[in-house]
Amino acid sequence: MKVTTVKLGEDAKCIAVEKLDGTPVLVPLFSQLPRRQTRELNESMKKDAEGTLDAFFRGYLGDDVDEMSIAKWNELVKAWSSTSEEDAGATLGE
Image 1: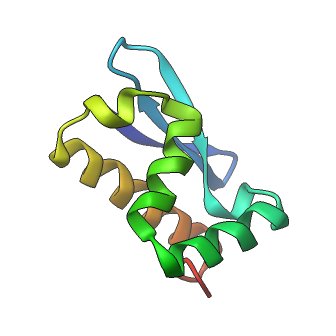
Image 2: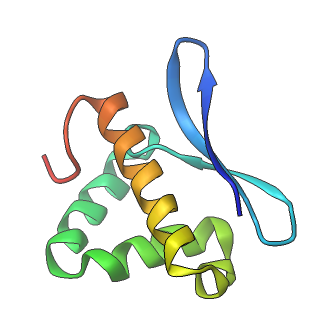
């Protein structure tokens, strides 16, 4: 699984994740999500951060989230979180 940041214009708006079968998937950054979803993610993160991220990424990557190594999972979460924070200028939950 390969994770890269995709630049759309001058702003990063998503990350590209290569699924286990090689299919590329674009995962939107936090700032690109509808407000309703960002509020739900923020509230859910306070209760169960890992479960929240698992459910979020499962929506884009399906069962690949269960098959990837811990190292790849950590790479995915770090890439999405840090790129989202850079794009929004704030950490998740702020």
